[in-house]
Length: 75
Image 1 (cartoon, one colour):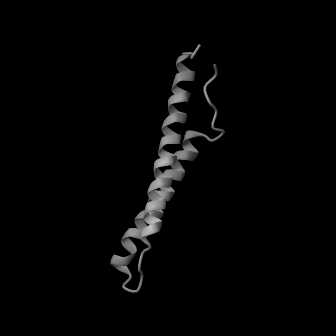
Image 2 (cartoon, one colour):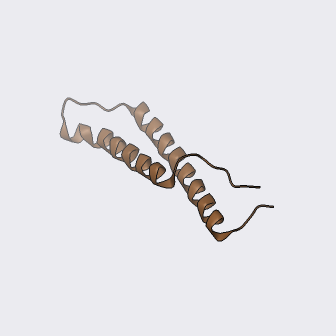
């Protein structure tokens, strides 16, 4: 059986993880720099879930790619 193809490269998933992490960090540290800014705690939960999902997808995609380069099969 062929490995699952996500249709997105590991590089794209890595960039998405970094972009979401930087946005999340900005949301966390903005109240420390800007006095009138108040962060939304719901956003922190959603960002954590997105990073978890993207990280898991990136890990699985890189694992599948490594398996294909080694020539292993699931049959």
